[in-house]
Length: 147
Image (cartoon, rainbow, N blue to C red):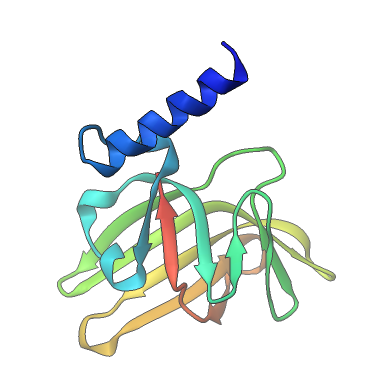
């Protein structure tokens, strides 16, 4: 197919999606604000990215919290977000596996947890089970992109 035909096909696809004639492909995922994440119907889902204000955690970008750098696993595994609801008016979204790296501990498997605690609001942290179940509280993400 000639390059001009590819450009024309892409333009037609975009117009058809804009007019609602076809749905966008699933490969793009969907971005959710923190409040919209508290719905069991979204999970389990592959994680494409997490935004913490101006910083994005995805397969190409790390985020730093204190002395820890959080990244996608080195083995190429795509993190997954899961949903649990251990109590009434409480829900947890757990994103794993991730890799947390620190000068002392080195690289360890870790996960990020978003806890919806009813009237107490949301609390977010990452855990490093390989380092004595350490819990590190962080700012909650501004949005999460799930596929």
